[in-house]
Image (cartoon, rainbow, N blue to C red; front, side, top):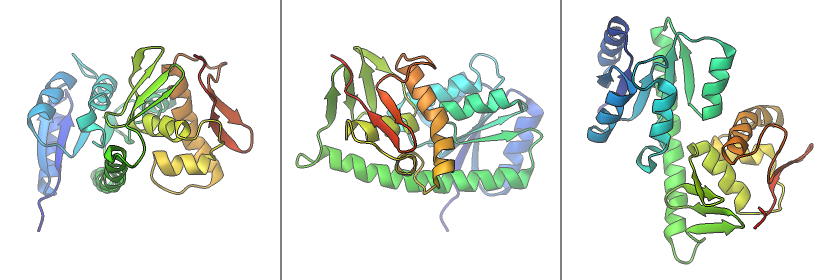
Length: 250
């Protein structure tokens, strides 16, 4: 039997941290712990971790900041991340979704709900990694697509999952990168929400669900590229059809 995954639990409440660690350990997982985001990053540098379960409100580095630091590292692109928090406001949840976080569990935690979320995220991460690793291998192949794409002021390094716009590096989550990459490969072509979600989330959704999933991603991507809520930038919404990337002006 293969050993279960390694899970890093990050929370500054000692009693809650201990209870979660004990529950996961009893379930057979290898469990690591940290009391804030800074110590969590230290652990990630030295240990093999398969999933991060982190609180939001913590000293030194909160959960949002930890998530963003993790997504900036190419080695952790596929690492599932679940927020575990007492913040149940819709604005907090929406912000976490916008960042691209994989799941959001509200305290007090039901153990079976936690186990189900972890199993689901680990399974999805494995499927996604296998798919994307195959794509990355194609990029490296000299007979396949180029390792970099340059469109006007937009530059994308497909190997390193890095993006520059106006000569400034833009930090994107993996889902944001996949969305931009899909549009960039066929500039001017309209791509349906369902096709985009298959790329970003690796599953098939109907048009309504796909549009709902893409909304926060598009909003976040446009914001990071420097466009406000009234300016779609060069990612155009073709009403009732999908989205297309217009050539960024030189």
